[in-house]
Length: 619
Image (cartoon, rainbow, N blue to C red):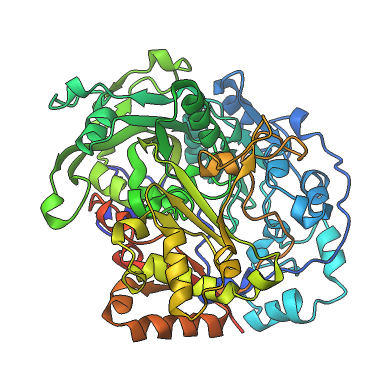
């Protein structure tokens, strides 16, 4: 693989062809066409019942039966599972959820299906999310044809396209491995390397680009991989500060954490999603008295893996205080395309506070390789220097992974994430159900934009502004710690010649009924997002976007904070322009997303220096 700095893994004195391709489906002709191809439309057909029992399928039959799958199976742990899959599994296991009323649908119902093939948009099971039959991946068909098929004038043939198991546009893997431990991943990557196979990787399956599914690949579904989070929280001993990093990097996560003036970490497995991570942190907080905060995504079914590697927008979890998802990474453990099982992280850093950064600048990243990759018992893993002929540039790899996208550089098997000190949670909600409050929703949108991106216009301090964020244009304003939302809201209405107490009361602090029947503010975002006992998945953290047949056609742009800072007229212009475009703002930028960078990651400066991100319909 290569990144902006050049080769990461180089083979010395070797005439071998490239060992393996780790699939990333974002390699479409252009972003604009990709956005168009993601247009989907419901056609209302019922899923076919599954004719294959994925859980008991033979690992030596089916796709590429010419290969010695039994050899791979013999190297797997007893809890791993290698299965054949088919179109019937996709329709039988996945289609039914898309017939559930949309507000009751959830990716929780898809993630644990036996075949591991379900996707959050049904059409992602076809190349470019376009089920029209094509022998060459739609290379001879235009974006206009996609628009006609998927949005403007869906042909009557759509139902037959979806019902055809021989449709050449189907984009589903025929062989799925559920690894349980790192040795299973090593065995799979080595088998793929030896046999010239592509690998696709699925963590939570919450990839709206469909990057976790591709035909003619060996899919590694990480959902059953070791769950570290329930016992993965580490409180670092401050007495080790100043110590030398050990050769096996065992103390590296804590040394780096302490250098950031933080004292706790959580280890997360390669298949764990935020539902599992949040519930692990909640359990620890309830046992020890609230002391931990983890930065994460809004949906419980999102994975810290793909989310972090693309940047990670924490609009609900105080990212504007603590940085993007990519900034929470302290140490990585991966299986690389050459089959090496490695772990790596910063081992030398320097203070960067004089330049306005709140975390040290990473100077050197070091890594180690496991010398006994076939060992199943983690207690017996041996870490040491990597063989010289591997020639892995860990500095470049650390740079590339954090911001360079998921499923590209290898298979992440675990990661240490930074935990922060717990700060009280303060969520605010506009009463959009009340007629008088719905009427001032546009004013609330303006208030939210100014509170977050131009706080001085409301006489709000930068510190109070950074305490809040919002993941969309809904009626929520999610805050943590000290803020002055209600006071600022009253001032804003007053400036707009509206002092009606009823309008002031349209905004209120969210409260929920606890087990004792008392109304109280949730302890944190995840606590407030837990499914209730009457829902389909009680105790799990809710989805943010339910599965759907079709997605939205939209473009995305970043608004630079520097442009808003120039004048109040610029703020007004941006808000009016966004409104005319029907743009949906995402407020997860500013403060910690700039100062929380270790200056050794590939997330763009345009991303870091944005005031907000907005999506808008192409029309």
